[in-house]
Image (tube, rainbow, N blue to C red; front, side):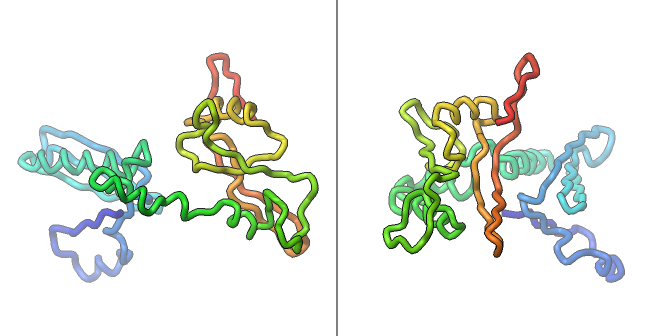
Length: 217
């Protein structure tokens, strides 16, 4: 989704030549900061500044009689780019109108973790054909997000990859020291022509306790 602004005054050709083709088109994912101002002494009683990650700043002014429009736009800009739950995203909003869609298509099943990591050279079980050499002592393991005690991380997929030496109990304790329980999990494994590997991991920031103790797992 994106914002498209249309200038209300004609722009000179010389000024247009200095602008990027997408100057007035801002994808929500590109918004870095939103500032709101209120000035009762001005004819523009409310204004919103939108700063983007590529250095653009768009200023929108609202007249006093446009206050309802300001509220609607302010609410939109607060909710859509900075959703606090994945259920707030447009793609999942359809579920409210037709819950049968999820049962029919099951979006999570489109992604196969085993096949994705196999193409990256990581196998969680020995291939049936035996053509691929697999390490006797695996370095990584596949973990189920849902455990008998509940879900480890609400915003992670049903399965994720962690070091093979880690136990589920240790992962749960590790997640408690991470924002939204997003413990470190591997998302990509790169192997160069010499067989050397480099991995990419994702997690949230460490939490700090009242005694300023942090988890570095």
